[in-house]
Length: 148
Image (cartoon, rainbow, N blue to C red; front, side):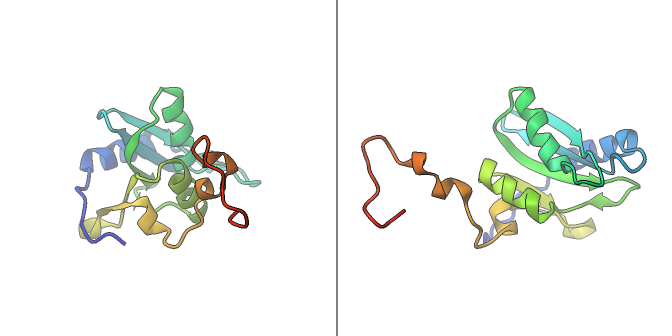
């Protein structure tokens, strides 16, 4: 776990809250997320709820950012509709965020307890998908027998 606090990006929280207030209507869209790219751009998204499951706002945000050519998100935050405030990512989102953006920071908490933490701190002792892929070995370096 990290001990060093990170700056809380209040502009990013407000961007997500603005989307939650203006775009989240009814049961289909109840969460908004905003992410800041390393170059300062902000991208936003909403979840797509469906009884069979559906992508959370954080996952839609990853796709929306990629569609805009943003592959280097620095910080994200999710905000609930009906002025619910900052909502931490669910377990599935935590795992996906760790796998896709292991250096990502996430804003969590509420009120005076808002803080920005590395996504890995939200999922300690996690399985890291990329660690177990056969094609991650540098060219010419085979794994020793019995190690994977």
